[in-house]
Length: 343
Image 1 (cartoon, helix red, strand yellow):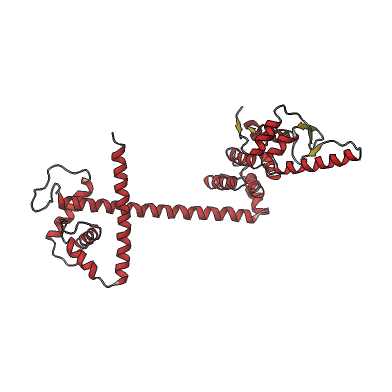
Image 2: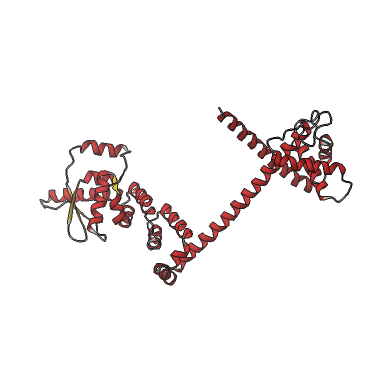
């Protein structure tokens, strides 16, 4: 048997427990079957705002009856649900614990009772536990109930469950009944599915864009590495290329081939040369070492950028540069964190 307990957090609830350490049952709960459940009124009032108000009204009524010498019973009616569900509800309110077996049998009833009688903590627990018991046969009933009981967490879990196994849900009688009797709910489900699909596509595009910027940042690092230190085939004029490959040799190898092509190509409309021009220009925009930078044309591109007058082109380029700066900073932070973790 598994229970979920909720402590008494408010001052009023702690005082209620302290004053009723030797609790006694002074109220009767009448269910639809006519059977009665004895309970402690203070514990019920501490767990439910509606029951608290009903018990206050009951006390006022008893006080008036005592003045008129009438005998009345202290009882509250909870109707419309099975007797055992009311027993589980009262037990949960008094002990502030939920038994998993009760939720498996009467989870829907407990959710309704906690909503009607404004037992907020019990409602949250019911939402959580009922969401873990969803099945293809019951999903649509629970979805409708979550909307009626204003249970947004459970409502969202139901919609995600439907999306995950929509083909199986469509084959149920409940779905066909929903199509015939509640087209608005069907429309809400389909709209949520469409919005979820669009959100996934946007996330994929965002991840793809981020990956492009990360790869471009790696290219910038390799370009600086080749021009400053040299690699296997290309290096600075004052130093011979290194014999051993670097850590990012797969990317560095492509940049070296592009540099060698750029140095020997004389075509004006060469796409590879144009790409190299763009890389050199981007490096110049990101470089903060004006005098000591060994990357070719770095200073010339900086001067040209200051003289640029075409605002539209400058705006697009500035946007690219600003994003690349953010990626560069984030990459440095990640690298620093990895170095700190390494013993």
